[in-house]
Amino acid sequence: MSITKTAAAERPGPARCDESRVVQARPLWRNLPFQTLWIGTSTSTLGVCVANVAYPLAILAITRSPALAGLFAAVQGLGMLAAGLPAGVLADRYDGRTIVIVTEAARAAVTAVVAVTLITGWLSLPLLFGAAALLGAGQAVRNAAGMLLMRSVVPPEQLTQALTQDEVRMNGTALAGPALGGALYAIRALAHVVPFLFIAASFVVALITAAVMKMPARPASTSPGSRPAAAKGSMLAGVRTLWSQPVLRTATLLIMFVNTIGAGLELIIIVILRHQAVPSSVIGLALGFGAAGGLAGAPLVRILHRLRPGVLLLAVCMLDAAILALLAVPFGPWWVAGLLFTATLGVPAIRVLVDILVIRQAPPEQRGRVVAALMTLIGLGVPAGLACCGLLLQYLPAQAAILALAAAEAVGVAYCSTRHELWQARWPGQGPADGDQR
Image 1 (tube, rainbow, N blue to C red):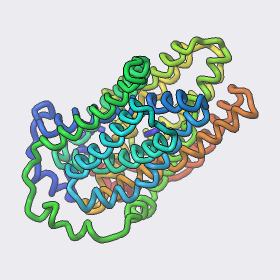
Image 2 (image 1 turned 180 degrees about the horizontal axis):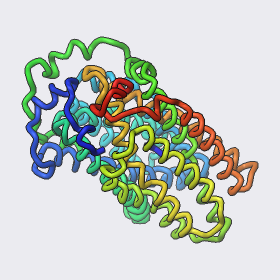
Image 3 (image 1 turned 30 degrees about the vertical axis):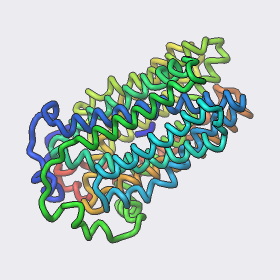
Image 4 (image 1 turned 135 degrees about the vertical axis):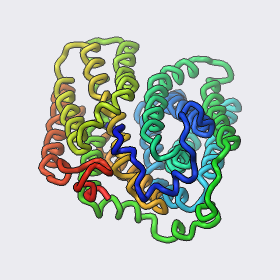
C-alpha cells in the first residue's frame, strides 16, 4: 500500500487559525485556485505515468536489456529519496507556487532534451538515466511544495474533501497513464518521440496553471519574505517530529513496512499469471483494477473515517496481508483483479488519515519538512522490497514467494497491533486521547 471525513476531524483547531484567515470557505467546485491547481497537478501526474512506460521502452530499444529498462524506476526512486528531505526545507522557506513553476520548467526542459536527442539519433543510456534521476528529484520537490500550496487555497474545514478529490486524480492517472504511454510509444513517427512530446507538454501545462493561479491574500506575517521561523532548523526536523510522538512513529513504521512488502507485488503477479498462460493484455487489465479500486474507494473516505484512526489503519493492513495470501490461489486473472480492487478500496481513506494525523498536526513552519520526511521514510523500503521480490522469484515458485510476503506482512501488522497507543488514537478534537497525536 503506497498509503475523514467527520465533523471532529475537520473542526479547525488553534494550529490552523492562520489558514482559515487566508481563505474564505466556499464550495470546492467554485474555488478557482484549487481547481486550477488540481488540473495542473493531474496533467503533470499523467505525464509522469506516461514517462514510467515510455522511458523503459526507449531503454529497451537501445540496449535490448530488460534489467537496464527496470533500472530506470530504481534510478528515479533514488532521485526522489535523495531530494526528499531537502525538498521539505525548500517548501518551508520559499513560495510554493514559485517552486512548482521552476520544477515543472526543469522537468519540461529535461524531457525536451530527451526528445531532441531521440530525433537526432544522439540519445544515450547515460542521458536517459540522468533524466530518470532529475525527474525523480523534481517529483519530490513538486510533491512537497504542492501539498503546502493546496493548504494555501483550501480552507482547513475543506481539506478532507479536497484530498478526496485528489485521490481521484492519483488513481485516475494511474489507471489511464500506462495504457496511454504504451499507445503513444507505438506511434513510430519521428523515432517514437510522441510520448516524450506529450510528457514535456504535460509539465508545461502544469507550469502555466501554477503561473496563472490566483492566490488568496496573505496576512503580512505569513508573506513569503517574512518567514524567519521556517528558515531555522535542519532538514531532519520533520523526521524528529514524526519519531517523537508514539502514535505517529508507530503509524509511520506500519505504513513503511506495508509499502516495502508491496513494492514488487506487480512483478510477482505478472509471473503468476504468465505461468497460467494469461495473455499480456489481460494481465495489464487485471493490474489496472488496483487503480480502479482506489477510484471506487474515494467516496468511502467519509464512511471509513467513522472508525478510530488506528483501528482503520490496522484493519486495512490486515486485509492487505490476507489478500496477499489469497493471490497465491491460481484462479486466473479475474480472481487477481477482484483481489486487487478490494485491497485498494481502503487506500484513499488511509492517505487522508495520514494527512489528518500527521501533516495537519505539524507546526506550520515545519509542515513542508514533515511532508517530505513522511514521503522519504515511506519510500526508503521500496528498493529493498523490489530486491527482495526479485530474490524470492529467483529461488522460489511465484506462489511460494507471495505467501512469504504475506507472512512477513502479517508479522509486521501483528507487531504494530500490540502497540496500545495505536488502538487508542483519536481524531483531532475527539476527546482526551487527542493529545496522543499532537
